[in-house]
Image 1: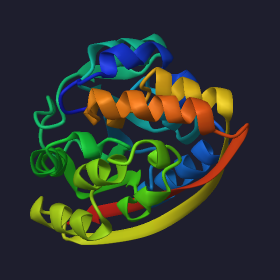
Image 2: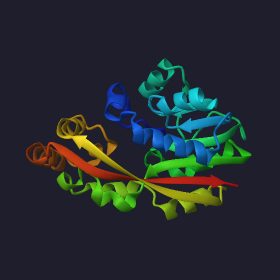
Image 3: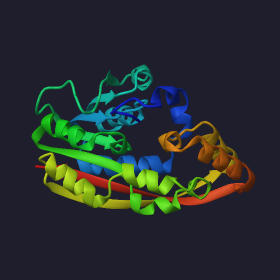
Amino acid sequence: MSAGGSGGFDGRAARYEEHRPVDAGWWEVFDRIVALGQLRGRRVLEVGCGTGRLAEALAAREGSRVFAVDASANMVEEARRRGVNARHCRAEALPFKPAWFDTVIMRMVVHLLDRGRALAEAARVLAADGRVVIATEDPASFDQVWFSPYFPSVPRIDRERFPSDEALRTDLAAAGLPHVTIEKLRQERTIPRARALDLIDSRAYSTFDLLTPAEYRAGAARAQAELPDELSYRFDWLLAVGSR
C-alpha cells in the first residue's frame, strides 16, 4: 500500500494481491482492526488502501461506509475495479472536510508517509469522538525478518522507516490524539522456497528498492543458493489506537 509518494507501487499493483494473500493471518489482523476501531456501521477512511481488499471487506462484513485513498494511481484503479470508493491523493493532503469520519485506518502504510503531516490530516478529518487505528510491523523484531540474513542492511533500513510503539505514541499525541493504546500481535508464518524467491526476484517489498544494487544482487544470489524448501518465521504487529 502507498499513501505518501507512489514510489514503486504503481509497478507493484498488478501482482500486489498475489504477493500478499488473504489467509487466516490476514483475517486475524482484520478482526483486531475492526474491534479496536469499533468499525461496525461506521463511516471509515482507509489511508493507503492498495488494491482495496480491506475496504471491500469492511463494507461487506461490517456494514461500514468506507472511503479510501492511495498515492498510487494504479492501486486506486485496482481498488475501484472491486467497487471501492477510492481516490488518488496523498495522505498528507486529504480531500475531505473536517470531522467527516468516525475512524481512520492505516494498515502497513505509516512507514511510507511523512507521519507528522499524515497524522495531522487524519486528526483533521476525524470526528470529535473518532479514532485513528494503525497496524504496522514492530521494528523491534526486524532482525528476525525472513530475508534479513541475505540482505544485512534490511534491519537498519526498516528501523529508520517503521515507528516503534513509543514513536507512535509521540506522533499521535503531536497530532492531537493523546489517548493512545497499543497492543502487539505475533503471527507464526511459513513460506515455500519458490514463493520466497519470487518475492525477492520481483522486489515485492518496498525495502528492496532501498538496497544498493550490489547488496541486492549478492543477497538474491545467496537466497537462491541457501533458502530451504520451506521457511518458518514470525511476524510481529503493532496495533495502535489514537483518540482525543
